[in-house]
Image (tube, rainbow, N blue to C red):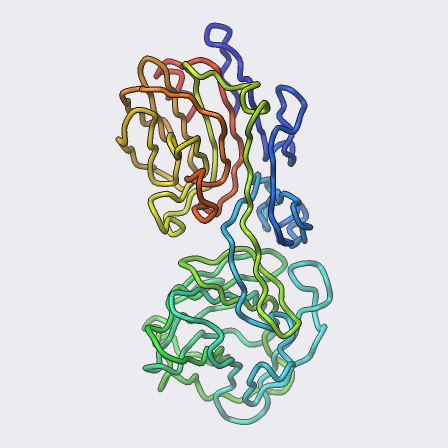
Length: 404
């Protein structure tokens, strides 16, 4: 995506090309105008496809784990991994039934030799791996897994024999939930269901002779796994178990010290003279290119950009403009969004244009990665590829072309 070629309409006064530069530097001025904060460490995927670790207050620039494509600035809301030993399945914290755990048995998704192998023994039984009450209601449970001789595993609960997804580690498919390739034979699986109420034991069960009827019907006998017999050698590699309260899974938050760990929210903003140096109060145009996932909209404020008093704001499902609250809906998972203001207002989602009243009042800051200036918990949890600002109200045809 290139910027609008606009001698008639003016060149941008702010161009944050996060995906290309992998930095916070504005390519127009060569300066970092952004104040960035995250009061904890965080993880992201590097250009080599491996998980990396970012220090406190270090921005994260994410990549596709399979293609290496640069995705841009990663911004996420605060989350807590409730699992106290996410990478040590041999610890007594976990309950194992007829399983052997081999530590440091394979290269993990972060490139270290820390993946563990779970091996069903030679007993004819249901081989399981579990933890009592590692989550509360409305959560997502996820783990990185790799085929090591056993093909299927399942998330299940002891309440009402609930089954929360059967996963095929050879074909990379799931009866429900999510399974995503992260390279080198590894998948990240995510349960998209959770217990309704009460105390609960989350269990992972394994089998290598799984009935396709069970798979397609998303149920296992008695909810406790399939009886199978191992050879004491074949199994499943696992790493990075996570249980987080929320409607979707976020980047891995490692734990291994007998307590939960919280990753703080990513907060990025431009204020004061840094903001006034590029912003035109009377007219202008914002453009932002970001990844969008409908599952990550938990409130009407979830968003990627907002100005003073929260308007305008650009969120994953609509644009709230300067002059009114008329929305237009997105059309794809990759959003290119434009918002122009002046005498009239123009809005465009991926080439779909609409208009608003265009009323403008003084603004003093922009917050990147959230739909609300006055709150820190409305992040969309996304990657932002590019954010550009033009100090002119681009005409609608230019706005439409910019967002196609």
